[in-house]
Image 1 (tube, rainbow, N blue to C red):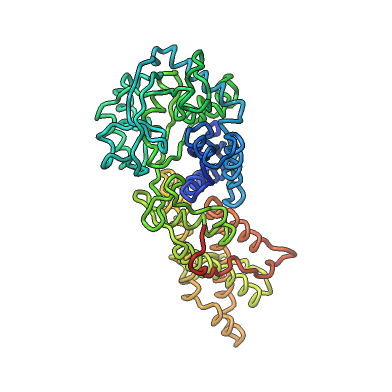
Image 2: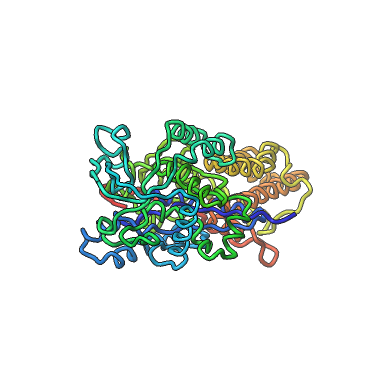
Length: 513
């Protein structure tokens, strides 16, 4: 049996401003999938990057009075630097303005679609939102404004290159409805099918060099046009694999991969589930196998976004409250469908209630009791986790691996963390039920059976904590490592107990992230 190869990607964000918490959500979800799959023995490539070749970036640089490349480099570095504060196990980061793999790959993709007869030039006039880098029809606007950014789109008239999207409507419908192109959750799959059923129109895939301010990849053979930023950006999923030169990574991680998984936000669903697969069909290349869609994060009911001016800096947040607190909130609070409203109070409450009080206290109590009652030596007993009163804990530990696997196979992060948390809850209940301090007192008073019962309880609790360390590794890798070290014997005994988490205090009003 060959080892499965799994390719996991995030979208690549515009770098018109510094990163916000909404993109951190996507990064953390992708990281969990990558870590979990690696732990199962799969070979995994986790890729992210930055979308540098956008008119949004050019306009933001002009507004800042900074040369475009300098502006893009500065902001892109802030995205790349999220690796450490978010504890990301990223394998590759592609920057579309700097990486030599990208342009040659975009050019090859363009020529492949041209060879298929799917590219043509025509004059076009339409309503264009720079924030979305997208044309809208009047029917798609909300009160004459972009539904994403709430601004009136610009009327643009020029001659551009177009892609024959209409040619692929039936094939896309069959692929999505039949599950060969899996779009999750079902609500987003139905949205894609509805969009296809409404009729697919060919879309513009280039912009005049003048309107693009000379920024971007020139259209092959037509230097008066630059490649449309979405065509450019979508190509990153294959250009980073050396598609442009037919490199080994492309054959290993795209054509030869068992799963090609894109994590995306709902605002870019159309591009990833309709435009991108059609481009690949035209080029004769395999499609992604899974498109996993998350909804928005909001703050005060408003979408967190760079363009909208509602931002929460994930690096600053992790610096103040800890990586684990940020990752845990994103994984435990954000629903599969529906937006999630972020506040500092909610992050602090979740971290204190669950990480500090629930998990941290459990681990600390268990290590303290092993030291207090057994001089730091974990009892070796056949009873183990099946000690009296521990049936529910035993069940939670036994069921956790399957529940976590099932949840992550369905891309349900809240359900996966709930399976982990069931072990924490049952372990804390078991402590209160077994009352090991009373067993220790009975042992001192000469109760002949108390010693063996206390051994069984302590062994059960140590095993439960070790189990938690194993299962938390994809979600909270730092926490998992600290738990593993706390329960790794040295000179025959456990290390002295150390707090797993600090309690977090709520900042003064007016603190900004």
